[in-house]
Amino acid sequence: MNNSMIIGQYVPGTSLIHRLDPRTKILVIFFFVIIVFFANSVWSYSILTAFAIGTALATRVPLSFIVKGLKPVWFLIVFTFLLHLFVSRQGDILFSVLGFPFYEESLIQGGTLSLRFFLLILFTSLLTLTTSPIEITDAIEYLLHPLKKLRFPVHELALMMSISLRFIPTLMQEAEKISKAQASRGVDFRTGSLKDRMSAVIPLLIPLFVSAFKRAEELAMAMEARGYQGGEGRTKIRALLFRKKDYIVFFLFCLIMAATIGTRV
View (spheres, rainbow, N blue to C red):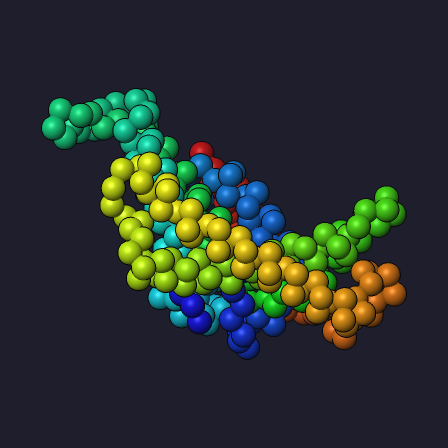
């Protein structure tokens, strides 16, 4: 497992989360994203955080792997917090450092937005960690099935979304390999002025784009060679069925939603 990026990676397993119907996971994640923005108290955020971490532990994917996989987004989380801390000036002054005041409301807002961002990234990443790309495709196609009556290309959209998720870690690995190869040739990405750094990125981007287009062409040729003709007339080897455990998970999540809304200030 490459732990530099978990978004888009699938880790096979036999945990309860792995065995859930993919539609259950997509629906729970969809409503979790919504309910996160309803939380506005310590208790509501505590409930959602405990639920997200508990779900991550239930996947049986090593927690250290998940934490390291979130490494690329830690910068954005910290930056969001510091941006509110230093820019926003709301509420009472809590303390000052070197004459710079820190405000109570700014601290609360920065922490709240950073926590929301962390919960959203963590929980949505669990979908790809525990669900194979083909299951995601089938689940999205099933959930969007009513749009077929409007002649909406549901199957093609679901396929594109699953392929995009699948190729995120692949492109990240490719970028890492190219950056190491360019660094061994004397390209410096870390020092120099902003202009020099931007110029140094060009030898990284060009091979990355060439590699991405090459992979896309190879995938298209492989699909064509296997007679892929879109969604019409296609059958599925695995039928999606809601089972008892799916209904139990829905019921537990409804309790989490009710508790989150009930603890709002």
